[in-house]
Image (cartoon, rainbow, N blue to C red):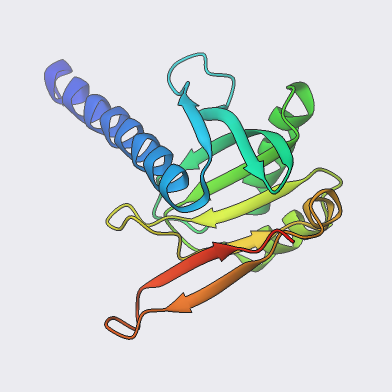
Length: 165
């Protein structure tokens, strides 16, 4: 493999990751109202996006890790997210991935002492297709609920709405 080939592959990998991060930023803004800044790149400390989420009358500082991968998210990714959240000033850690979470990932999110949220955002669609909320997030925002609405025109499309009563 030549240096040029290696550079093109590396650029393609980095470019795909950055493209996915910006895609996630748009999807979370448009679907959930998160106001996020992009911080991904070398030396980002594991934080790809950071900002605020206004949920009801609460303003929540959030940080987001994006994983553009063909693998299902694992508990290792949740431990990494917990480390980043515990070192930072965010009240909420969000893991966003292209693939659905594994059962181990779901269990790690649910049992974490930190407020965590998993969202599956496919790279080819501007929607959230899966959600997993941790128990600590349920305690922080007890009135936060996700409801799945299936479109009658396209039953495979899933939309979420928030009920913050």
